[in-house]
Image (tube, rainbow, N blue to C red):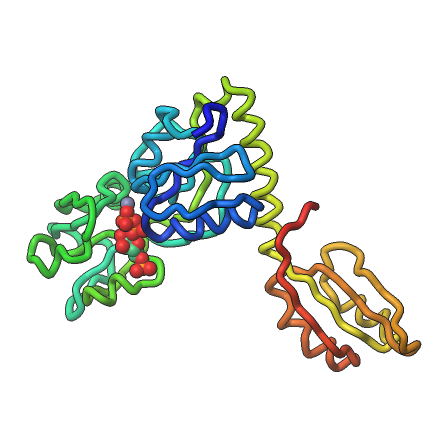
Length: 289
Ligand code: PRP
Ligand code: ZN
């Protein structure tokens, strides 16, 4: 561990762990084998990684033990620690939802009245109940909330749902959501006193921005009949002016363009109708705009 390295807290084991590390990798940061280690120094960036329980991350960052952290908004709002949210990271999207055992129903909020709800999110749930003038008992559990109904200690649960697999495995069904969450980058308020670390954070943030922008775009390449150039340029929703290149065959030109991720299938048929061939769509690692 280097004294002047920026310390980043990430979830040790859970929904966000692998995706957090992948984001760092897409920023060009080498993370060596970290199995079972709580602290890892990255090789080519002034960054140390601390692997923690996600619930503990806001407090570590508040106290400055970690300078920054990657954690779900669900944990930030529940823990109410004094940290600054730097940016949303576009992954780890999930909902905090009410869920109930198969064979029962839960359609409206007022049906919760008088029920016992197990959750790891007593503050977010408590606020929701107050806002809706509902009275229910909250049982706080720090994990394995989903088994509470089958143990007979709760009627309902309020927990994070992402794919829905955990609910399904425990014979529970989701009802309405009470909070939407995604992964965010947080920073300690103590960090602004440290110029060296603040500069490392600025560099990290600009790499994250370029990785996130790249993820939203694809690189499109194709050959087209020269005569259709004007029509095809109008079809392509290019983020910048496309590149047009000559080919050995005088009747054809090649076009390269960066397009928004989700637009390709809308224009694919039109491109082919206008004579485009050899269409290639490639991922982009990084993009500096
Ligand atoms: C949440 C929740 C479930 C899981 C649901 O845990 O407690 O275990 O995600 O995901 P699924 O719908 O894809 O099955 P999370 O990783 O947020 O943290 P935790 O382990 O600290 O509860
Ligand atoms: Zn947790």
